[in-house]
Image (cartoon, rainbow, N blue to C red; front, side, top):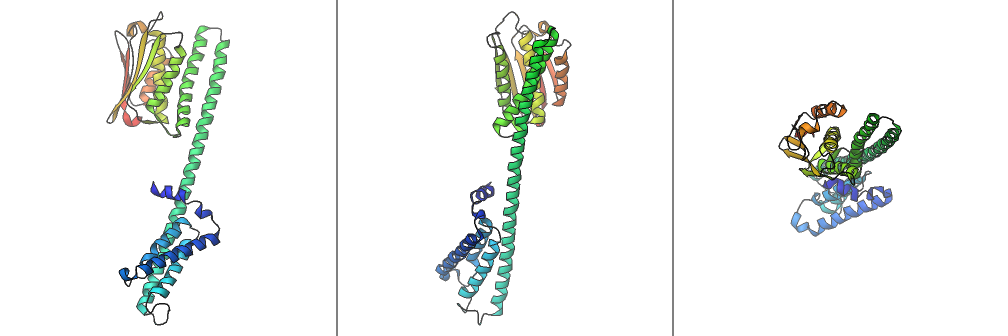
Amino acid sequence: MAAPFFLWRTRSLRDLPVAVKSALTLLLVALSALLRWSLDGLVGPLPFLLFFPAVALAAFAFTGGMGFLAAVLSTAVAIYAFVPPTFGIVGISLQWWVASGLFILLMLGAAWLVETLVETTELCMRAERQKSQLLAELNHRTKNNLQLLSSILSLQALTANEEATRRAFEDAVARIAVIGRLHATLYNSGEYEAVSLRAFLQDLCEGLQDSVVGRRPVTIAVEGDDWSVDLEHAIPLGLLVNELVTNALKHAFPDDRVGTILVSATRSGDQARLVVADDGIGFRQEQVGRPGLGSKLLPILSSQLGGRLETSGEQGTRAELSFPAQAA
């Protein structure tokens, strides 16, 4: 995390003109020489030691070969000013020439490595930003297309003459709205690949709650744990909750009966559990198992999550799905 942060903070330095970067590199070497001079009595016969930070910093902050320039300048200054006999090159022993050659080779290698890492990291960061932008655009367009499709189906429902046909269109709009809400949540969160399950279910149930406000005295509550769910598994989870809650709204509270629908998602280790329960008139009266597209979708959606939905209840209905947590 630190390296990308410093790369971002120093990116303006890498865009400076070559002449300016060269001057700053020379300044770094000069400061290293002054530091080496001030510590001459402490570091003893180690002429190259304090020049390494200048080489590494020039390679990191400026790139464009500035690390190589710093390595050459540092070696020249170290040989001239700190290798005996100082302030000259006549009389320098073979041992010092070998040490100087090894130093410049090591510094050139270090400069190449640092500049390569910086450039590679910047490429990865740029690719990641482009990926995020593309995913954001994809989710935004998907959301808009789903809204357009929902509008078309809603208009088609208004023109339907038969009640069954109109309900089929309305159910299709509701299912598309679930996927649209998921993409809206992804787009607003800025994650684009995974969604907070709690936030997604809360948004979904608020939409379902709004659909009955003023018409049905029914409250929809969401509780439980929160964890990230990828797009592949969030869709069947959302559709499953939509089917179960919609079914309860339609059948659990006849004659404007007051009631509550509870949606709970919990996780324990590698297992997760989804529960949708209501305090309505009960399983038998609701006829949850009656034939229909919704009842056919429930086992399909459950199997996609690697679980099996179980429904029971005498005073109110409880639908429970246990599934592997890694599937979400």
